[in-house]
Amino acid sequence: MSHLWPRSRVMLAVGALISMTAAAQHAGSRQQATPQASVATSEVTVTKEIVYARVGEHDLLLDLYEPTSGTRPFPGVICIHGGGMSGGSKSAFGRHASYLAQHGFVAVSVDYRLSAEAKYPASIHDCKAGVRWMRANAEKYRIAADQIGAIGGSAGAYLVAMLAATADKPEFDGEVGVRGVSSRVQAAIALAPPADLLLRAKMLPGAGTTQSYTDYLGAGPDENLRLWEQASPIHYFDRHSAPMLIMHATGDPTTPYQISVELHKRCQAVGAEAQLVPIEYKGHSFWSTKKWFDPVMERATAFFTRTLKPTK
Image (tube, rainbow, N blue to C red; front, top):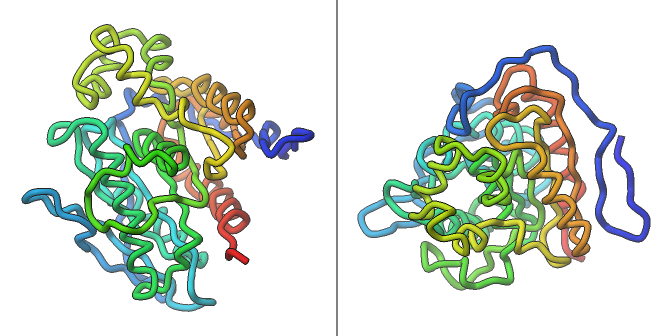
């Protein structure tokens, strides 16, 4: 049950705790639940390995999930996988993209450059290029160009938060892929986002918990504190940011729930629309587990249905 704060656009979904009995701990942010293979159905057409941008000799690829019926054009959603910026692939969100397509969205699940190949902010540039590709190809793929959202988990949620917060900050656009169209998203869903990298490092001071983002940034927090601040999405939210739904496990061992509490507070303070849904779960990647998948995607679909509306 959501609570609407008076005189504010910010909502806190405090009563919608989804219960479960499993208490298995995930060892780290790179441990994702095994993704289920995505297949075309009578309701969804899947086109894989589409090149959405090229960086040097590297093709950046996406998989496209389209509804086979419904009112066109459809709202679009870009899906972004996690993996600590050092691993993972677009297949991790294939099932999520397929679910969205079954419910009337054109969804793409994208790959982006990982930290072994390119440091911050390359992955942000790539994901913004993915949004621009959707917008530039809106007519071809029956996408409503003014109705594009983003969803991602863990490191993917970090990137989603960056998309939501930096639309008016051209330094994050980069020069990857299609140019000349907006990379703004109209709605965002962040699942366990490490939105404040410094707070995460302070709460989990062991080297193992900070190494993935040290590799991503090219320096540890003790070496370049300012860089860690600059790379944290929490600092970029303002009243112009895209509406955002945050879901986070209260027992997350790798990205503490308090980080999302602080992100929600930031949104509340600056007048950005945000919902925080705490999840009673002692683990990290709840969105890809058998128990959690349907409740998460039902809420995600409802949020996108509300926020991705035609511009009048």
